[in-house]
Length: 87
Ligand SMILES: [Zn+2]
Image 1 (cartoon, rainbow, N blue to C red):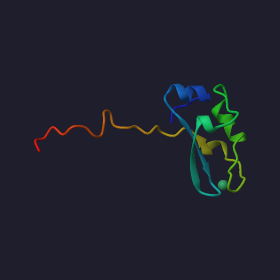
Image 2: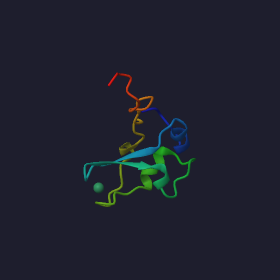
Image 3: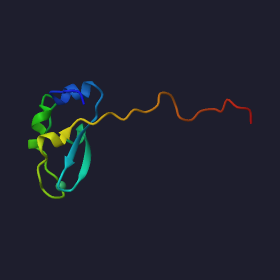
Image 4: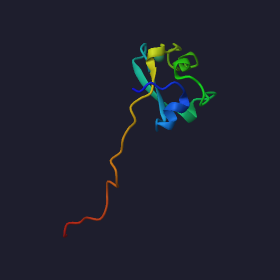
């Protein structure tokens, strides 16, 4: 993971979501920025954990459990197209 300082830094680099792990529930959530209410682009990523809480157990994530996930890369070009082989 690259060292992004603010939400905007990660956005500019093409990241669309935040990864939050709950060590109590052992689940990892990927939260799109648009669902992060009240989070501004200028907010520091290392401060976000203070605003987040697990909906299941109510625990706050540790700072190291909030990070930017590796972006999912889709193959370039369409997956389906006209067959070039003769029928
Ligand atoms: Zn939890």
